[in-house]
Image (cartoon, rainbow, N blue to C red):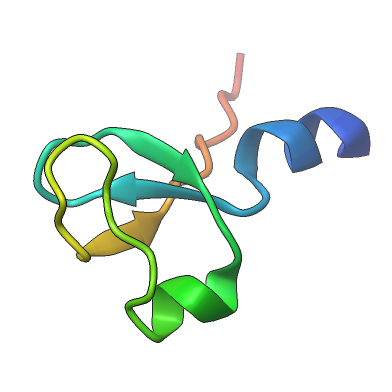
Length: 56
């Protein structure tokens, strides 16, 4: 995957642990619980998982 594509898809993208909606935010703000989910209001966010490379 090209570096520009990887940055656009994964960098600063967080997923809500409750409703699985995605949100782009500053990692420091997420760490200090200053960012909440737009959809459900939860502050439990995780980084978006990078997809495993297929061996095909």
